[in-house]
Length: 196
Image (cartoon, rainbow, N blue to C red):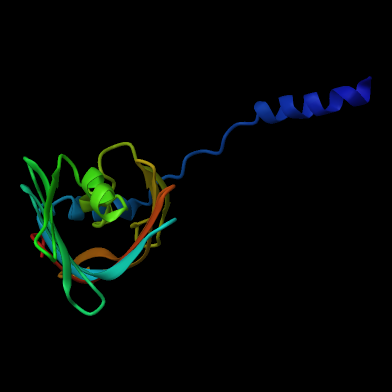
C-alpha cells in the first residue's frame, strides 16, 4: 500500500515546486531598445529563404517600411523580380511577375492564398529590427550586448544569431523565424534607417 502511494506523493511534490524566476533583461537592453524605438522608417536589402511542409522559396528581398505601410519586392536567385507586395491602410496588394494583381485585407491571408505560405507582416517590421511587436512577447535570452537573442511572440519563435552596427545603431544581420507551419530565414546585407 505504501509503495502504491509513492508516485502520487512524487507528483504532489513536483506540483508545489516554485517555477524559476523570469529572466531579467541586462542593463544594456533598455539603452539598446530606446535606440531602435526611434526608428520609424527603414529600407533593407537581403536574402530570404522560406520553407513549409510542401513549398519553399529562396531569393533576395528589397523592403521599404514607412509609417503608411510597406513595399516588399521578391527576387529569384537569378535576380528576376517574382513579386511585389504593397500594404497600406486600405489593405495589401500582390503583383506577380506576369502583372497579375491580388488583393486582401492582410498580408498573411494574401500570401497564403497566392504563394502557399503566410508572411507575418503584422509583426515583422518590429521583429526584423530586433524588438518585440507590442507588449506580449516572451523574451527568452539576451546576448552580451543587451540585444535580444531569442523570443516568442504571436505563435512565432524568433532568433537573432548575429547583429551588425550601422551608423551607430545595432541591427540584426540574420533573423530566424519559426512557426508551426513555416520556417523563415532572413539575412540582411544592407540597412538604411531614419535613425542613421
